[in-house]
Image 1 (cartoon, one colour):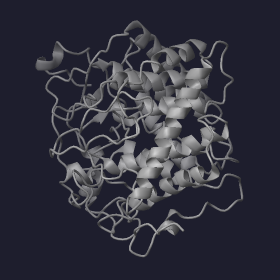
Image 2 (cartoon, helix red, strand yellow):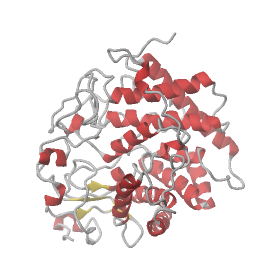
Image 3 (cartoon, helix red, strand yellow):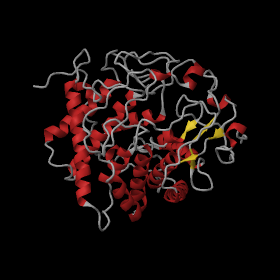
Image 4 (spheres, helix red, strand yellow):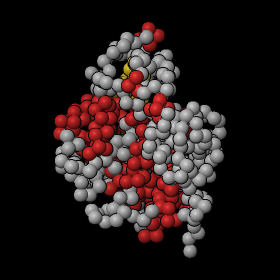
Amino acid sequence: GAAIPAAYASEGPEPLAPASGPARPTAPDAGVPEVDISPPPGPGNVSEAQGDGLPPGIDLGAPQAPLGPFLDEVRYGLSWLLTMQDESGGAYHKLTPTAFADLQIMPEEDTSERFFAAVSSAATASLVAAAAQGARVFAHADPALAGACKRAADRGQAWLDAHPEEQAPRQGPFTTGTYAGTSSPRYVDSIRLWALAERWESFGDAGAFRAFEKLLQTFPEKGVNCTELPRSPKARFEEGSVFPNCTVQLVFDWTTQGNFGVIRYLTSQRQLPWGADGNLRRQTANALSAAAGALARISRDHPYGRTMGKYYGWGINGNVARQTMLLHAANLVAARGLGGRVSPAAQQARRRAAGLGLAHLLGANDFGRSYVTGVGFGPPQNPHHRPSMAEKRPWPYLLVGGPWPAATDWVDDKLSFETNEVAINWQGALVYALAMWLPEEPGEPAVSSPADSLRADGQVREER
């Protein structure tokens, strides 16, 4: 481990030795922000697109489990994440050098000193959520890891309970991105919400469930239309307009993680504890249904069926992919009789919108090009991705951030981090967007391709 620079020593804890081996970067940024790596286990961990954690017919304990290589990556990420917890149970906000390293070298060749940013509420809540889910997913496949995740989730929650006030990330001299969530007024609360929902689902923690309900009731904001997209950012480096305080967010990423908690709450496999607020559950299901209906309408009215309509912002492609979670979850919840009566046609419209969102990422867009390296027509050749830059070839299957602030503002340039970088939270969303099209029963064919709704020019066919 390296000593913390004098300029930062008064702001953070004493350093711990980093995890052995090179840090596997989650984004082109120098260093690894924990709030960025934690969301993927939510939308991407073993593709929980089937609603119960795994595609049917898959036994993670089987010697030839088909998700083995993918689980190895998830295992690696979770194992690293656990090293970010300090002795108090809090989690360091980021592991980073003080400045960006050379873009042209492989991660394992980057020998620059790294430092731990101080413990923060956001990082701790992120760790609790991811660790709690990891404990559930790996319970049979890797009991040792599941146990470590359980202990980490317990220690992290104890830290959060002892620090109800927000402990913001203090990042001293670091110039490698703050990841402070300033575009959302309920940034930390949204992650706490997710963490509590995962603790209930994984451990049956009734106290966590009650705390979840109490926190969830504070989210609806009077006078705000939560079924409208926010105003697109105009300035080149602007984070975007402040997102409203909604139970269900139409646009969500690492700055607004409450949707992960809401979806877990509504799709929980557990019997609700005594005293659960049935009205709150119905209201939340209605909010999810309204959000899904709004996305379906936005998709219907857009020439390419894009669920984000004319909204563009940093990492917008990740948001398009992630909206499939809302659309898919709304149908899962409707199948449980929650969210009001939803007609078969409305459910099909949600599936169609999710499919067209994926089609948009694969070429049904203003460029007529795929935004995923190595896939489709004219995919990105120069992603802002350090291994790709170092090897002078695009690594395959990476989703780039996409155009903003307008539909045509995308540059396939390795230096365009604003539009052509990659990030694990976007990649996890893409995994979910693909996994939701898996067959629902073993041996069944996959659902029809989203491209079936497109004309030869990539725009949406008129429905008759």
